Length: 146
Image (cartoon, rainbow, N blue to C red; front, side, top):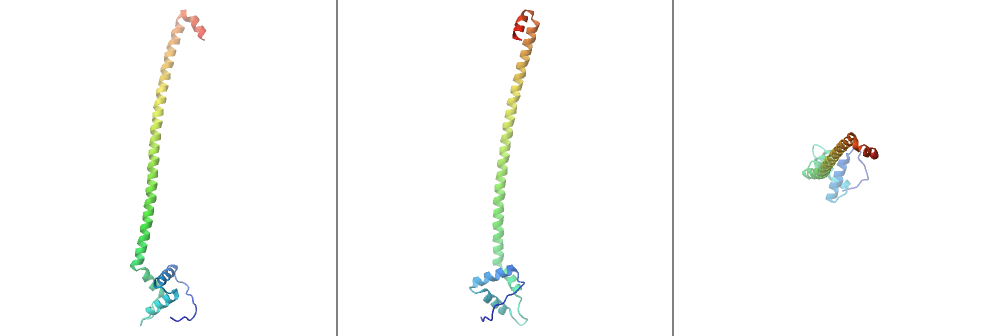
């Protein structure tokens, strides 16, 4: 292919540029040679094809769709792993909360039992003191205790 000098084309989509570069690498030619070849092949009696249309057609071919599908599947797999990790963390937290609740209930039951024991002891002491106060012979003992 002849080289008449450098030139640039503005307004080409970045994705189209990337696809053109990749296709040129795959064919083992420079980007300029690849574009020249595409333009010359695209020239027919009706006139030259639009470069962007050619590149979009290349994007629509199955290999591009396969790559896109693979990328989507990879993203889905990573999302699934992340969600699974979060799910396991939440389940672990729930189990810890249930254990803490069970422990709290056990401690509360134990405290209730101790409070009941203290009430019974207090009532028994109150009865003994009342008995001592009513017994006149024990009046001296009562004064000594005070």
